[in-house]
Length: 323
Length: 299
Image (tube, rainbow over all chains, first blue to last red; front, side, top):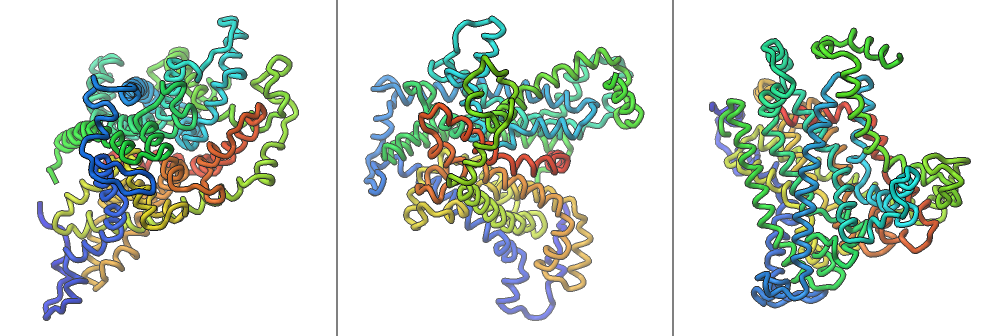
């Protein structure tokens, strides 16, 4: 690729002072332009990331710097798993995995389906889209509060409707029973996540040229064949990126669970994030909480790898070079 | 009949998606409109329920047999009134707005500079910095809040909105920079070359040429940033402790929740008033948002 920067054009021919070099040299200029973003990201992102790992090896408490204690926090949490005393940590890992896998799969399927529907020619397009975006726009905690009310044990509108229809004769205990609570939270998460996936995939669908569909229709392709052999392959790169984000943010979800159940009943809906908040901030054991948070990192790395390969694929598919 | 008329008119005016005529109306009704309608009802219902509850008088809230719960008879503004004039809600709302706007401005400033440098100055290692910024977007707040709490404490920013203004950009900068990089790449390079030959500095090029052309991108980035700030919970919950400093999401969860059976009215009113600014903002910009996403995706 040819060098298309014009840094060389602006370079004056006469002798350059240090000030000129700081002002005009491309690398220095880049440095100045990057400085605000870089400073913030290093101070409040990279440094805490490292510090979090360090904290997980110390016995720090709130208001007290900890000393290095090796792997004691991890052992205390139940590492290796057969020496786990109370089982809460592994329960939270289990919950997090179930929550992430079920919610992501459903979000993907419904989101893709919704995107395909929205890509059809429909009346009132703008209004339909803004309605679809509402769950994404309403702040999560506030919609979680609305769900809390919908899931109320006495006055739930769902229980009421089902009772009116004669399907049940008791009120469903949505958030009081462990499995019901998990299912309710997963549903709320799906509800919250579908619009983002649908709208992003819709944006992807709109980049697919209609002439491909016309050609396929002329060749007699069925709807399923069109989806399977045109839409889906062209959408794969975007799906990879969107699902990475979705999996990542579902895995590290905190607010939905905290607003609705705070990990209860009896720890049955604790995710790793909520458990680490409870241990670190409420109980004051920063080290232990940091160990739980650090245990999430391998999963995040896995998701990032998937995204990386998704992005790589996008470039060669479009015939671009690796820059 | 009206639907058929709408459909007809749409078919006449539409020339781009010409294949819709291949399907008959009854078939479309089953394969498109019905599923779309069902999904939309599910998506809108919790919000509808929030609105409805916040204007329902108390006795209708818990008496579901006399009154149809899906509707409201003689709506009341009591809950919203109580919220706005008898609680700290206006302060929380102000805190949320102030923090969101300040963090958005700060991160837009930083990401415009960073995106421009990565795309156009192309200093040594720019590609790697670009990739690193993308990766920064993948670091979730849930694994950062514990160390950040100690760092914030150490900087002496605990329980101060300033801590949030400084921390939120770590979420916002990666996304905005990524979006803006896509936008900047679409601006013809020749414009910049002309300006350089005419003796403009990089700063002048950025402010006088690039920024005016990238306004759509900047609008999407700022809307998205505002939403993320408004939505943010775990940092605000961890860093802020006094009632006066809380943001709406944190205050709703910690200050409003008590055992009162009638609390739902004011809780829902609080949730509604807290969401309304964003809902209004988005209803104006939804088409813009979709096209911005298209731009980012195409890139």
